[in-house]
Length: 267
Length: 266
Image (cartoon, rainbow over the protein chains, first blue to last red):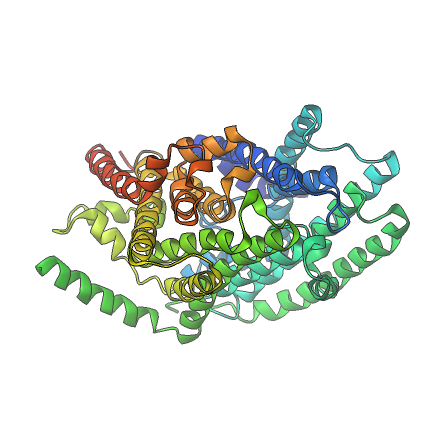
């Protein structure tokens, strides 16, 4: 029975997507165009230069295209379904999360699992098409594939906890869309979504290494393209696992504190 | 004149409403700046690592993001609320707008004051000042006038693109999703020479989705690269006019789409 409830909670956002054809068409069109444009851009940039920042053309194109595909893993529009924590706090409907027989933290996690699995289906399909079309390079070896897949899994866990922290921030502020946008921007910049971190100045890379953001995307993609050698994979996976544990403990603590903050606007 | 007075009064009230939450107000300014900084970061990384992008001098390249950002900042300030049309439709607010004695498009624009535009414009003006300072061009009256026209044309073209998406939202409210993608595309691919891309892709971003007309083509004309683009020189030079015509066409489309709007409840 618990499994049935979990399934029902997890499929909410993906079902919302499936029932909205323009959104699905938009995702398909967006992914296709974005992959073509990003691949063209990096190929064009490398047309007159060799290896830059330790990355050759193939690595840079593969990294950039995989970053586009990975961005699909958590990009569902909860806002349209009025089910973001920010909206619940604003409209006061967050109280319902505390009235259900399902703890709010579990509901939040189940929703995220459903979204990430749905996003994974899109990303995997895109990856297979890109691999078949020769847009991205295959992993260097079976070991590289396994290690980067494990790193991606850990990266998604880190990403979940980072996004959860951003959501939990809503419990302490009533108007916080700007703060959330700034945090999302920081996440995108410091995880290497805008451009691979290897292209940034040294001080920027050093700063990023002390933050959890690079563990979400930069590490798994760098392992995949071979920018981080397999010999360093153990350390990187250890750091990712460390962030998962630290963020899990932090968010668990914040959930307990957040429960005391729940108010419904208007009494 | 009466319409301008009403618009001004509503804008003043909207501004005061934004001041209600002071921290949020300041952070909204910050997010406008931060969003623009992300574009600068991307452009700077590319310019530093790949010098001579597309055969352009880096000071010439800088003119592209500066023009685009200034156009974008003005768009956010003056016409940016068209972004939210999809949400207003979903929430049924458009139906209320239809009952009031003020054009719906104007009511949409007067929905709230865009605080983030202050941050957008601050960074954009700073970048434009930097780009002009580093430029080796002779900034004659003609060039300055053309640059101003290009910024205004870019603003109108961006408004036209988002108005078209808003028209689609009147029929399919979920089409609003496309506007976020469009904004991302404009930010990512509108800030450097498109001749770095394959000709077909450059053509797509010129004739399919005309973002080349926002900043790339006007900057090409200003910096003497006007003959190297995928369009005839006269068309590149007429970019500001393309923006104006596109905006007028999008407003005509808006009126038509609004006339066929049936509401989400039928």
